[in-house]
Image (cartoon, rainbow, N blue to C red; front, side):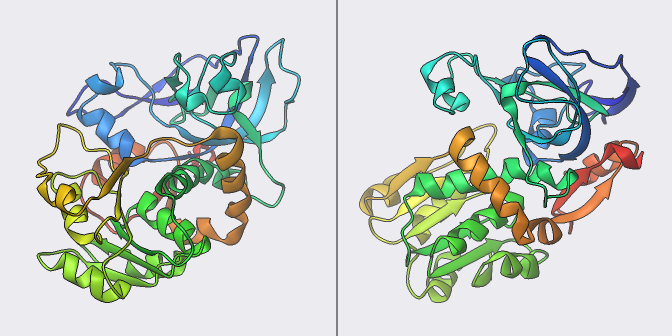
Length: 336
């Protein structure tokens, strides 16, 4: 099969041939239909050590595909089934896994493998897609679930004023869920206006350009200082900006992956008695299923800006390190 290989920091991904996979007893082999390029994939290739990634790794965790082979112990899936993949692989036996929350399993492994024609995953990581969702678009279930978990962790209530720092795919999907779940104001802020129309189409009530007056602009557009600010970028200084923007005794939700540490003065957060909450992954049984149902609401047409085969991935991947007008790029190996 064709696949894309990570070799080392500073080197583009490399196309290679690998043997077609075969499943273990509890696994299935998928023909990859869609795999999203995620911001965390970019982070991994810039600083792989924290992720335990080395040369030869195949990226890609936002995966949907068709089952083409099953292991001897697999009973609930069969060849031809269309599935979306939960990229957290737990032991399958502990209380967390049995409760549908493998992200908190002591033996958690975060899988890759989606930048390829075929991928092997545990059968328990798969959810069958509803029939009215295009197979490739099922790859969006993973980021949509991440965004839903952000809202759940925040404790947002109907009527809350919400601000979101960052108009990337996760920030935009947080806006989608916040508005869908009753926020009165949902203001997305970014350093560019490229995604303004997309943010409004997904549910934002307004859009702010980041800058020195960010806190004032968010308060104006939210009808007062926001009750909750989601930091969805992961750049130094943005937790501080969120703390300055949120209301007294409000909540700041840390979502973005900030590699290499941050610079943050806790005095503002302390003086305002802010709740600082961090969020990662999602609940497989509850949130992933809700996300799949929501994919029927037109999200793919608003979020996906390009669909590419495997061959252009190295060039497109490198271009995404710079700010572009792209939002979610979906790899569809059938286009190769």
